[in-house]
Image (cartoon, rainbow, N blue to C red):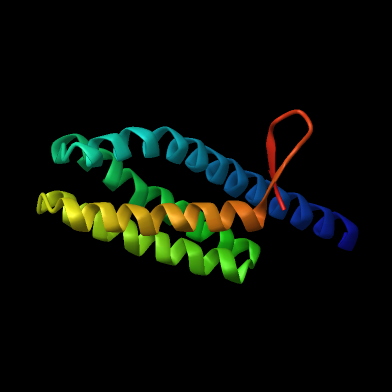
Length: 132
């Protein structure tokens, strides 16, 4: 009975990690598809075009923050919180059509992406990535 309970618990935890991991990977792919068009919109002060991407980044950082909290990576948790705050600032700047503030927020946000990737992402021989 104890063995069955332990196995069931282990499978449940594994399934939760898999779900969190899949949500995390999906959010990273979404971020990759969002950043380029968002930067282009910001570079041309196309705030209406930038608004959906800015809002998406707040959602993306919600997922990353949850993932890293579940996996106990203090530096990644901090970078996620900083990125989420920068994404919220970006949303506000885009709504206000404040190009300078939007570009500053985007730069801060992009820095958190790079920092986390450098610390927690490893490129595999096949060109794919895995989380360290």
